[in-house]
Amino acid sequence: MDTKLYEKLYQLDFNQWREVIIKHIKERNFQEIDWENLLIELEDMGKSEKRAFISNLTILIAHLLKLMVQKDAPDSMKGSWYTSVTEHRFRIQKDLEENPSFKAYLAEEIIKAYQDGRKLAIKEGQKARFCVRKPSLEEYPNQCPFTIEQLLDEDFYAD
Image (spheres, rainbow, N blue to C red):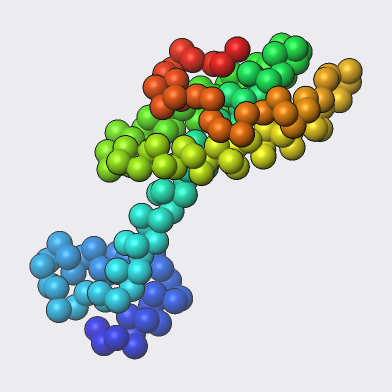
């Protein structure tokens, strides 16, 4: 298949393009592989995996912060935060099992995720209603108060 046909197939039917590429690889028909688009997809796949990992880390941190800062929130609110912490921690653990290389930059990503997680926790805290106290900005630490071990510890909930 020539380059123009690959490009058209890639643009019009990604799944069929992917199946053709897989078939060529399995048959070791390397001269027929659309290397340019395959490399783009592999690079994007890595970026997407990392973005999902950081997103889960951000939400985990935000809800741990909410549990820490809003200790006086009703149990019904805190219950959803506990559930979210458990769910996102599970996703992070799974990502670390499937992508051990993520551990190499975990500390660096926690610093970045903390800033977004803090903003998220603050925004959600400011939406408090029904006699629930709205925390002040100063109650949210500027630096991550959680260690890597605490973030990954399935029994740690910051409350």
